[in-house]
Image (cartoon, rainbow, N blue to C red; front, side):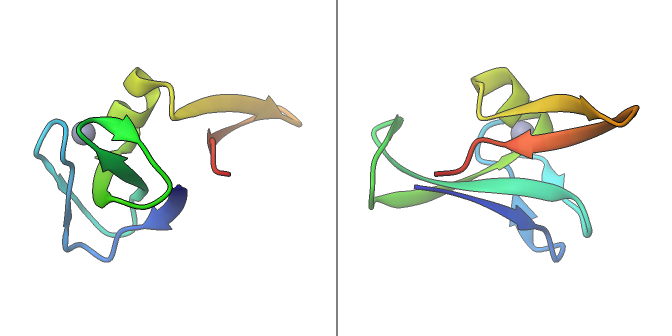
Length: 72
Ligand SMILES: [Zn+2]
């Protein structure tokens, strides 16, 4: 399961290990052995890593670029 969140400053990306500062957005994903599952260990990914992993993308709406997480 995926949840789009906003960092309060106490989150670290599990992929690139950088700190995700407030008010940056990040994604919380339940994973087990690197595979997405309904319930498992929760991994946190920064926007850059979400884009790399295909968990997020930019859409252009009314001339504005917006980040969208693929949540279920
Ligand atoms: Zn990252």
